[in-house]
Length: 146
Image 1 (tube, helix red, strand yellow):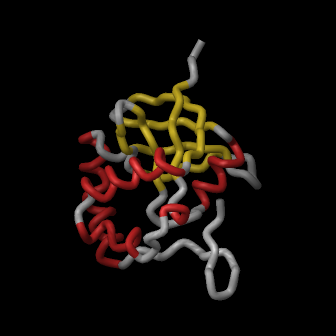
Image 2: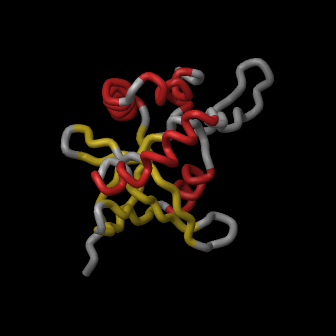
């Protein structure tokens, strides 16, 4: 589902992060990775077919892992929609998964966890687009490695 600008009816591009938050992410990113808070999503590029990587924070909700885009419809969202699967590298382990985009009450639960656990400055980008449909969410279903 693509975000729409209600006034123009055109897709809304992802919001840029502030320089301060970018610096915080750059400095703290390695710490978050070592602690297992952040992970690296690898997904096949929808145009190039080449692997693309992005660092994200997976969210656990009722024992299920989700990926949520707080910035709207980003490149990783479009790539994951097209590929339908990816790999997540976390704390030295890599797991393949099938991506199932969710909406309605399931997406609302993921957003509620995100809002409850994310410090205020990091919610700023989310709060610029408060409509749940502006935040694609994917349930990660593990693929067997056999």
